[in-house]
Image 1 (spheres, helix red, strand yellow):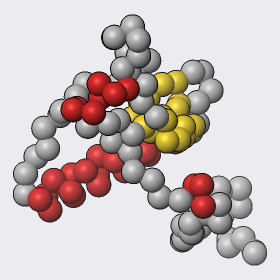
Image 2 (cartoon, helix red, strand yellow):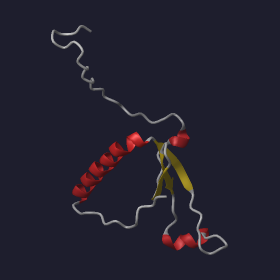
Image 3 (tube, one colour):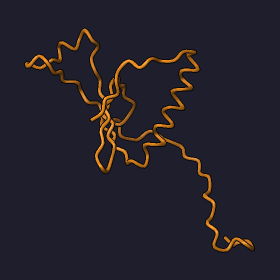
Amino acid sequence: MTERPGEKGKPKEPEEITVNLTPGSDPKLGRVYSNFAQVSHNPWEFTVRFCLAPAAPDIKKHIKEDGTTAEIPVIIDVMVPPSLIPALIKALQTNFGKFEKKINQAMPATAEPTTH
């Protein structure tokens, strides 16, 4: 690639790249359903733990002997670097806005965000 006159030392514009996402070959990492997520972080990464919480009537089957805690199966932990979080939040907000517009109603928050 040759430089044009007057462009010496100027940073090159990033080229646009199209990325196609393909499912992994490992069936354990296929599509899963989750109805509960927990978010946590440390100085190096954010972790989103996706779980499958039982329906309210069935939660009693999962309560431990102490009577105050329930075991909920973890489907998968997804760990991402902090640099990905702003784009992830923006993508979720954009897609959620499109979803609400499509169903023609705002979705109420049903639970407080879970973090630690």
